[in-house]
Image 1: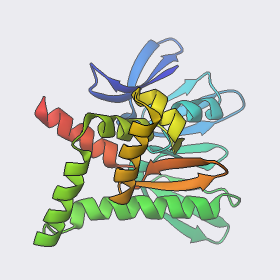
Image 2 (image 1 turned 60 degrees about the vertical axis):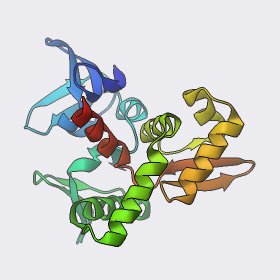
Image 3 (image 1 turned 45 degrees about the vertical axis):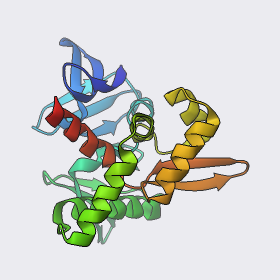
Length: 225
């Protein structure tokens, strides 16, 4: 099993898996609705109803997939953020409702974190879909696109889209430039609200403010091909 951030034939991120009796398959992550973990293996649920067994633990698969696209809501469930509709409280606990109608239990221990993740993701989607193109918003969007219009900064977005967060030294290795240069780009992107940062001990960790940013940039890239 291997994750490809941008497979050339699929033109997007995908997961390469071996399926018993079927052989090797390349699965676009947009086709993955959820994954369910059992003892030593997992079920992959497709958006169109197909369901296959994989000889890998849920933890193993979770570590391969980008946290910006998938959310672990329970020890048995890993969900594609794209298809999460809402989280509701019921008599016997909280549940995530998927856009296809599935109802998934939520871990009590991780409830606060999961609620925040779903809330933040919904706010980002609503802004992109519903925000009016007023003169002020158009100027703001233009400024953000100008900041992103640099090959190194696009590489940084791509790297952060595959991880929840990265420190400066790790980003430096992934984009192959000096630490002083990468720090300059990170500070600029952080100042414009594209990134958020947090200091832990002597390290500063960066993450995407909007996890869907990489998806929008990929869409723009496809339009230009």
